[in-house]
Image (cartoon, rainbow, N blue to C red; front, side):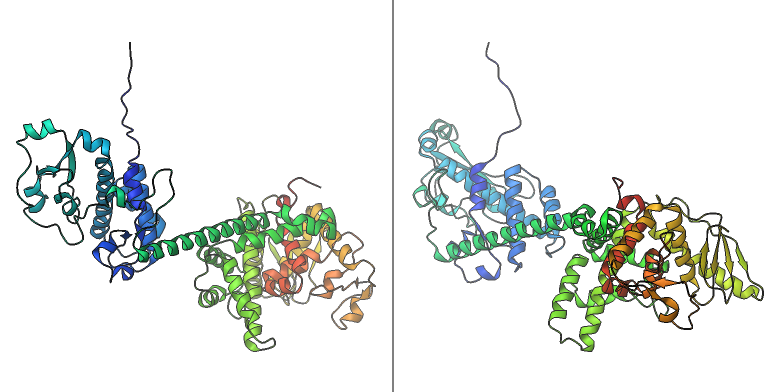
Amino acid sequence: MATWTVTSDVGQFEEAVEAHRERVPMTAAEVVDMTAEERRAAFWVAGTHEAAVVQTIHQEIERALAEGLSLDEFKKNLAEKLQGQHALGGAHLETVFRNAVQSAYNAGRWYQLTDPDVTAARPFWMFDAVLDTRTTPLCKDLNGTIKAHDDPFWLTHWCPLHHRCRSGVRALRTSEVERRGGVTPGGPPGAPSEGFGRAPPLRGEDPRPPPTGPKKVPTDPRIEQVRQQREQEALRAAAAEAQRDQAKLEARKREDPVHWEPVYVPKYGPEAGPAVAWGRAMQERGLALAPAEAKALHADLARAGILPDAQAHRELGNLFPRIERLSPGASTLGEALADLEAALADLEVGTVAHRRTERLTHELRTSAALIGHRKSIVERETALVRAPLTVAAGTTAAEAERRRAEFDRALGFYDLMADASLKHPTHFAWYYGKNLRGRYEPSRRRMVLNARRRGRTLVHEWAHGLEHHNPELLEASLAFRAARTAGLPEESLRLRFPGAGYEAHEMTVPDDFFHPYVGRDYGGGATEVLTMAAEEIWAGGGALLLAHDPDHFHLVLGQLAGDKAWPSGR
């Protein structure tokens, strides 16, 4: 027994899709002086003068035809593509959609019904209107009109006949025409609206390509010229899109620390190289952010005392207003940086404008790196414990309170920038004296803080604690210092900085560090690599550090990332 299947999938109306696809998208200005005949091969939207917008609307209508999408689905897809780039109201957009879809459907119907095999079996056509309260008088009067398929009537009264026309045409057998009373006599009762009613070209004049044959050239050279122009624009757009995709792929590679390890591991060894690679990758991650997201993250860090603002916090406080003014169209911080670098290349070296723009590029990279790092680490579940503050004799209660608040804020640097995998110096007393020299004393479990360097002292001595409690950080600092100072002579800090209070045994190897004290030699038990850079970043000198010694800046971010910088161990 034979079986058969019922399905709602009727397939794609290929003739309708092809009919719409063959209409060339043009702006309203381009069709102003065209004749009605010339406009038949064009697709345009009244009042729209942006070629890209018209092209997108044309493509989304083609998609709706091919996939059988509703008006609401078309509107949703178009809104996602254009993102507010057009000013079409809902009623106008509905008219555009219905006119285009009905024109395509009826053009496709024309090509089906004019097939010789169809006209031989069904030689008569009947005008078939949708009768309801929205039906126009013209379509109501024409409803049921029957004419031979080759009657000239159809050349001037082919649907659609007006905006939002819902009428169509049915093919009838001779027997059906006889049952309906024969051919309708006389001429049409009225004329279609301007620009409507013209039948598609007859098959011998059809400018559309046959399914497998070569494409015929439309008879209108102006339409063909625009068509070729649009095709070239589409090719250029596709090439540009491919280039952007490749650039995004390369950018994603640069955001991975592994990408940078071949650069820095040979330079600083497996102890420090991955940490420098981490910091470099974080800069790329930050540059990939949209300005709005980066601005919000930047503000969070600035409020916490990182990325300082105003005179006391002067480093990056006005960064984003300046970026928005100098690079208003940038979609990422990386694009803004490229705009700044292009502007910098056009400025005369040594001028005020050149110095300001150059500094702005350093500030942008700094903010990007810190933000990228902040987004990529695991935040601690609880804030670091603030230790009791013991003060030296002669310290007033008011001064002690002020210093206590400063030290609390300074510790916020590690709350925000240190990964949860790091171990911190807990149960350490804070000892404050106005004339004391700051130092970290693990044997006595205390940090000595002073007034002259205030919050800097806390950030600095806490970094010593991080090196003490996290051996991998100390190893990274030692490896970095060794790579930078190999073969260089030591210098006495007392001779280098007379009157600064350094003792005779304190030696350093200055290298080209941002401060000679970074190279201080402790004989392997400690360094000033992490300490000096951490306090410089907290105090607002991050941009200067990044400009002078980017590897040192990036190393510190890697150290603060803890396990993230060495995910597979060493």
